Length: 141
Image (cartoon, rainbow, N blue to C red; front, side, top):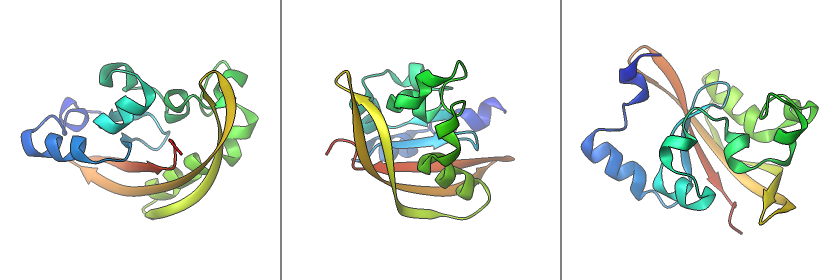
């Protein structure tokens, strides 16, 4: 992936608009690797933007199942039924997903917690690379 593709949000107004969004928003690839995230996502997960990049979403979200496999997010048997992964896969194939309901088991405040999410994914192309804009609702309820 070119440097241009990875750094496309580091440009003026686009960056300001991205960070102004009140919901956690991620730019991911088809394998749910986070390439960029907005300020709301950083605040919610307590990680710096740089440390969030090139991690999979389940690792950043503290999905309970990431610890079940040495590969982390995507490596556990439960990952094949993950609603977040399914939504990103659909978007990677060109189908937008809007507020799809999904339940995830996350570690929050040191305890396993069932979280009801609404997941939206929008595919887009920048340069010659394809990406997915991933928006999560319901994480802090």
